Length: 133
Figure 1 (cartoon, one colour):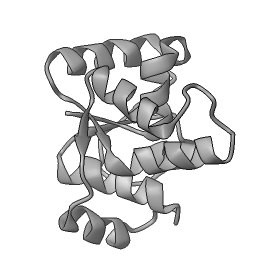
Figure 2 (cartoon, one colour):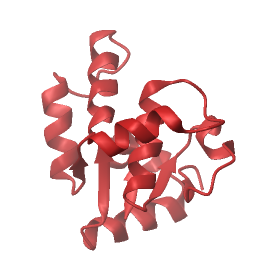
Figure 3 (tube, one colour):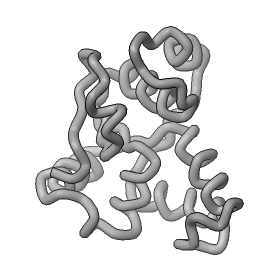
């Protein structure tokens, strides 16, 4: 399974040219195999970006949600085990959304696709794919 970070879900859905060639192939294959997912917290991040007028790809967060899910990503809820793990992750910065996204990928034994250097450089066994490659 592949778990997309919020910006990677946006890139994959609205501007695939921002993704690296290898990453695009990985995402396309995961979508075809029903192995593409996004954490619920990503939609919170997207809604905040829209509210702050830093993201203008759609009229609303609801529309973005529909488009990302419609592009083949399954939505993974923040369950109790994910929330607990997010609080326990050692060495990861304190951005709550990133902590939830990383914990979601770990709990689901998935590869995290991100372009976020803080997540890519984090010393942990979590499988990661740089979205820019």
